[in-house]
Amino acid sequence: MSTTGLQHELLLARRMSRLGTETAFEVLSRAKALERQGRKVIHLEIGEPDFDTPSNIVEAGVVALRVGWTHYGPSAGQPELRQEIARYVGRTRGVDVSPDEVVVVPGGKPIIFFTMLALIDEGDEVIYPNPGFPIYESMIEYAGGKAVPVRLREDRNFAMDVDDLAALITDRTKLIILNSPQNPTGSVLSRRDIERTARLIGDRNIMVLSDEIYSRLQFEGEPFSMLSVPGMGERTILLDGFSKTYAMTGWRIGYGVMRSDLATQITRLMTNSNSCTASFTQMAAVEALRGDQSAVEHMRLEFQRRSRMFVDGLNRIPGFKSQMPHGAFYVLANITGTGWKSKPLADALLDQAGVAALSGTSFGQYGEGYLRFSVANSIEMLEDALARIERWARQNL
Image (cartoon, rainbow, N blue to C red; front, side):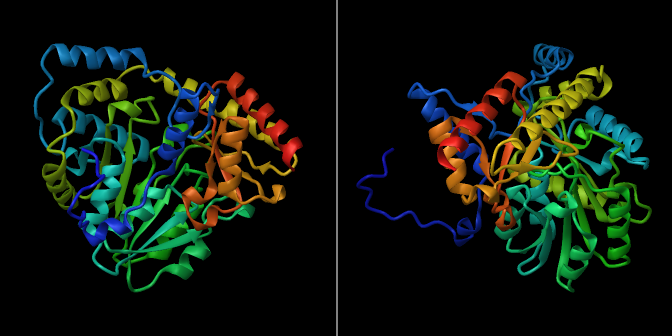
């Protein structure tokens, strides 16, 4: 129905004005529109692996459909998958996890959203990384909380400074969000920084949302989780999932691990919103955790190789400067040397060079001066993108 000529104004709830967005999908839409006009665009904007879901997982999903996993399931997730997640998290984080501490959800974002709805009252403060995943700030503000950014600084390779965090904690702090490996910077929190953060929290009743969706894509060393710190298990909500690790973005399946009484409340939110996560995708997820893991290691090594190549290429282009990320599949480039602001430069590269990237401001106020490039594309396409950016720089800088 067209909105032209409608007689009644749409009266939205005030909370809708506090809802943000994820700019990657807006830029993708613009890039697709250019492609429909016959333009060739190299997509370095969207944050998803360019690999196909491993064949054993696809086959498990197909079999699940054929044998009848097409009906409602428990809101918290199928028991078989919750048990498998509990085993996996227990093994990788070195803690005991019970299936009743696991909630399966359609993607990673519901754990962010449900955490805010379950824990944050009007005026409660939530500290989150900035530049960071934009849905953090959006959901904090939508729930009525106060979003308090902790700045990630380039001189620390964008790893959070615990001293900066300490200065932001107040009596109203209810939740701290950690993300490692981090989007958009590719930074990694060290075990030392995580343990220092735990000591900083001390006995205060502050919860931690530990977003570890890229944990299997850390390039060097073993990832360390706040869940693994003695005494922090009951105050940590682990967010993880299958989208990035197993190239399953379209399957929409993630999970949270948390104390069982909170899991009960998150499950109530699932019941009221989605009913349940699709049953056949859960059976595919069981195979993902039980089956061959070589595809994950292949992706990790390939993203590391691409990141190194792309960083080296960017650093040869006047006005662009980047450090090597330590995980995920993003490169955050400092573009202050170009003399351009982030959003106009991202627009110019898309419109004039056919390279789709994201303005750093898509990830918060401290993202000004940066562009984020996703290296989830082939080496050939990344090389082409670098050549296009270099030509544009020669002509416009």
